[in-house]
Length: 400
Image 1 (tube, helix red, strand yellow):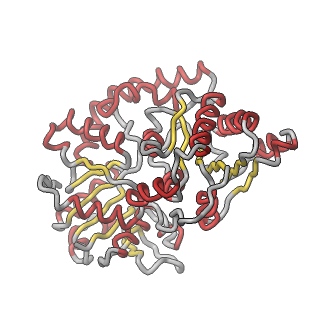
Image 2 (tube, rainbow, N blue to C red):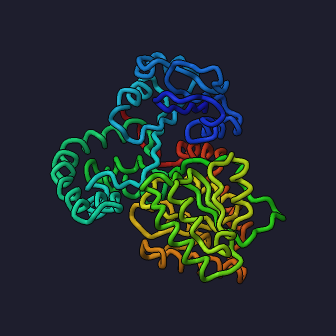
Image 3 (cartoon, rainbow, N blue to C red):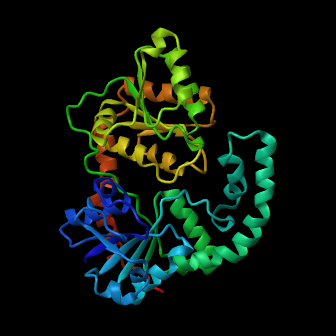
């Protein structure tokens, strides 16, 4: 069965595109020996990968275009968005198999998780004064519990049910999508929901014999409030004050505030903390392979590719417990990390120290961590998982 992938947006179709999400999944199908293309919007670019197939917007909504594309099925990175309903319908009307993918934490509706939905504005805007946070929560209630729940969400569920399967990126997000569809359309309709992770590149793998140093890494867009940079710095400063010999490597966009914080540290601590900034993927593979732990300070994440890549390289993960961090909870679930109960520098720092102690005493195995998670995340394994959906005995009928 020849599956194409589709991201119905315009991206530069170069190697960077092919190393992530739909481009990388296309590589996964190719590795299994199938004819595959990565479909996205025209116009083409000079450095488009040969596997990239460009299409005009009107072609993506035309069943005849899909019928003549050479695909037997399509993995559509739709995220359940109503904006792509016409594309999903065209694929099904062309007689092709359709699998929809998403990468969110699943807190998208009161029907999915009423408690978390009530708290989402409060949690997302952690950096605002309390009165402003409370105002955002109150202001969101009419839209969330009236327009979204009663008007938008039934239409969104119909979109999610278009085709053969709708796939959540983590076990908890999948459960939320399943609950939402079951409540609005019944248990039989909810059987279309499956768990299929967002893939990682096969380059992220721990090589036997690679030494794990007493090192912690953190990767993120540190200029984004989502990543809770102050929490990261508080956690590192707490841990470095309690444990000598551990080094910390911070990768990604470094802010002026981080530079100032680093410069103000005592010299002995400053020498243990390195602000690397943005680096190529090859440098990240080396960093993850050397490090024992990936530290995650984020307030919310969908699938969190960085920690998935670190797991494939044999590192464990430490983060905070939260309904908006279900990916991190999953990533720590196979002797591969731990969670802090509270989002404070002290609580996250204590969790980090406990995790490093497990490495000291041999309770963490890079080989076991890498072996388990590469079988989950590597692109060829994710592609194989999608193909397996159609061999399950209770495969539901496609709908348009």
